[in-house]
Image (cartoon, rainbow, N blue to C red):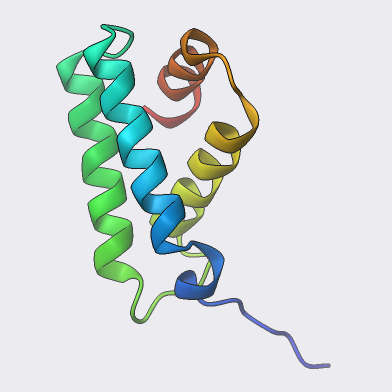
Amino acid sequence: MWVFLQTARSAISDEQLDTLQARIHALHAARLLEDDAVFCVEDCIVDCIEAMPTAVATDRVVEKVIRMVAVSERVSVDATFARQVKRKFL
């Protein structure tokens, strides 16, 4: 049986990463996320970006960012998204 492992690069687009980062910073500007939370999320995103050339989508840091992107794309209320960032990703 062949198992296809999706690459990190094919799982997350540059546009999705840009949109996620912009939303996180908008939440910070609106005081829905504190500095420490933003720094933690930024670290996770940068770790994912660094891993993308060689990583697969199931790598821990990549999978975490994939989940963040999915929640961000589907939760439209900023306060709700900010609470979920704190609950699920910090």
